[in-house]
Image (cartoon, rainbow, N blue to C red; front, side, top):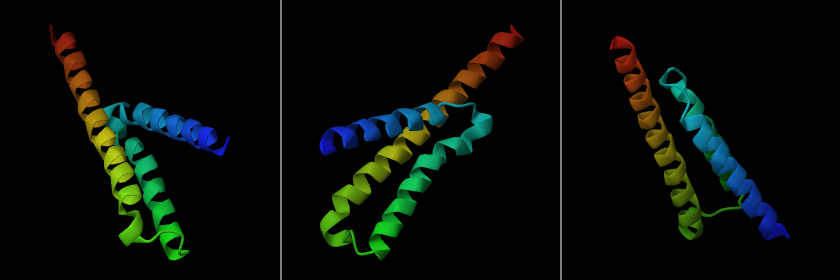
Length: 91
Protein backbone atom coordinates (compact mmCIF):
# COMPACT_ATOMS: atom_id res chain seq x y z
CA UNK A 1 0.00 0.00 0.00
CA UNK A 2 2.83 2.40 0.81
CA UNK A 3 4.43 1.92 -2.62
CA UNK A 4 1.12 2.50 -4.37
CA UNK A 5 0.53 5.76 -2.48
CA UNK A 6 4.07 6.91 -3.25
CA UNK A 7 3.56 6.26 -6.96
CA UNK A 8 0.21 8.05 -6.96
CA UNK A 9 1.69 11.08 -5.20
CA UNK A 10 4.67 11.11 -7.58
CA UNK A 11 2.34 10.94 -10.58
CA UNK A 12 0.19 13.80 -9.27
CA UNK A 13 3.27 15.95 -8.57
CA UNK A 14 4.67 15.33 -12.07
CA UNK A 15 1.34 16.09 -13.77
CA UNK A 16 1.00 19.28 -11.71
CA UNK A 17 4.57 20.25 -12.54
CA UNK A 18 4.07 19.70 -16.29
CA UNK A 19 0.86 21.75 -16.15
CA UNK A 20 2.69 24.61 -14.40
CA UNK A 21 5.56 24.45 -16.89
CA UNK A 22 3.24 24.91 -19.86
CA UNK A 23 1.75 28.17 -18.58
CA UNK A 24 2.20 31.40 -20.50
CA UNK A 25 5.82 32.60 -20.85
CA UNK A 26 4.71 35.59 -18.81
CA UNK A 27 4.48 33.22 -15.83
CA UNK A 28 7.73 31.31 -16.45
CA UNK A 29 8.52 31.16 -12.73
CA UNK A 30 5.54 28.90 -11.93
CA UNK A 31 7.42 25.91 -13.34
CA UNK A 32 10.12 26.45 -10.72
CA UNK A 33 7.83 25.80 -7.77
CA UNK A 34 8.21 22.01 -7.76
CA UNK A 35 12.00 21.97 -8.34
CA UNK A 36 12.47 24.49 -5.53
CA UNK A 37 10.27 22.45 -3.20
CA UNK A 38 12.23 19.32 -4.17
CA UNK A 39 15.56 21.02 -3.41
CA UNK A 40 14.12 22.25 -0.11
CA UNK A 41 13.09 18.70 0.83
CA UNK A 42 16.56 17.41 -0.10
CA UNK A 43 18.27 20.07 2.02
CA UNK A 44 15.94 19.31 4.95
CA UNK A 45 16.61 15.57 4.68
CA UNK A 46 20.36 16.13 4.33
CA UNK A 47 20.61 18.26 7.45
CA UNK A 48 18.50 15.78 9.42
CA UNK A 49 20.81 12.94 8.39
CA UNK A 50 18.19 11.06 6.38
CA UNK A 51 20.18 11.08 3.14
CA UNK A 52 23.85 10.76 2.39
CA UNK A 53 25.05 12.22 -0.91
CA UNK A 54 27.60 9.44 -1.43
CA UNK A 55 24.98 6.71 -1.16
CA UNK A 56 21.85 8.47 -2.41
CA UNK A 57 23.25 10.48 -5.32
CA UNK A 58 20.91 8.80 -7.83
CA UNK A 59 17.85 9.79 -5.78
CA UNK A 60 19.14 13.36 -5.67
CA UNK A 61 20.38 13.93 -9.22
CA UNK A 62 17.83 12.03 -11.35
CA UNK A 63 14.58 13.64 -10.10
CA UNK A 64 16.22 17.06 -9.96
CA UNK A 65 17.27 16.80 -13.61
CA UNK A 66 13.82 15.53 -14.59
CA UNK A 67 12.11 18.49 -12.90
CA UNK A 68 14.42 21.05 -14.50
CA UNK A 69 14.21 19.42 -17.94
CA UNK A 70 10.39 19.43 -17.76
CA UNK A 71 10.56 23.10 -16.77
CA UNK A 72 12.82 24.02 -19.69
CA UNK A 73 10.83 21.96 -22.21
CA UNK A 74 7.52 23.38 -20.99
CA UNK A 75 8.82 26.94 -21.13
CA UNK A 76 10.08 26.45 -24.69
CA UNK A 77 6.73 24.94 -25.76
CA UNK A 78 4.80 27.80 -24.18
CA UNK A 79 7.04 30.37 -25.89
CA UNK A 80 6.57 28.64 -29.23
CA UNK A 81 2.80 28.59 -28.74
CA UNK A 82 2.81 32.29 -27.85
CA UNK A 83 4.85 33.15 -30.96
CA UNK A 84 2.46 31.16 -33.17
CA UNK A 85 -0.48 32.99 -31.61
CA UNK A 86 1.18 36.34 -32.30
CA UNK A 87 1.91 35.36 -35.93
CA UNK A 88 -1.72 34.32 -36.39
CA UNK A 89 -2.88 37.77 -35.21
CA UNK A 90 -0.53 39.50 -37.68
CA UNK A 91 -2.08 37.74 -40.66
